Length: 155
Image 1 (cartoon, rainbow, N blue to C red):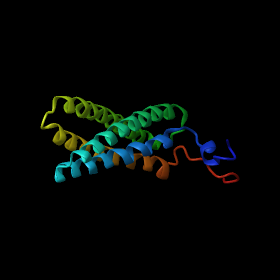
Image 2: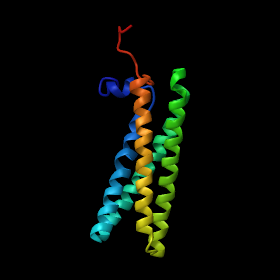
Image 3: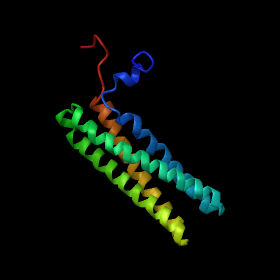
Image 4: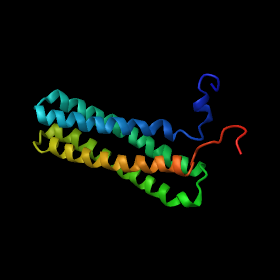
């Protein structure tokens, strides 16, 4: 396994593998939801809902692996506040995505007219929260070196 996937073998935890799914899928759901409403195309709305559901699964996986990673990763004292903010933003994003997924699922069954607009507004909020959370994650890695191994032979 180490020969085929040396990068994966060097990882301290699986969190980085999962964070990219919600970061791509949920904003993409937003794009398709905008297209669905702007062009009045039901198929774009269906794509948006599927992307929302898949992004929600990714957000749940990212939040779960993040909580596991927090127990294993060495965090400098200066980064404690940043990691807490990152964790809160990730949990809020995952929670809102779950709520939106439920609204999209049950709203389609009752054919409520406001559901597409509610999903659009929710996706805007979730995407904003994801951007803030991803920024804090980048800060943890690039500013504080959290979960980054030094190259062999480095001081």
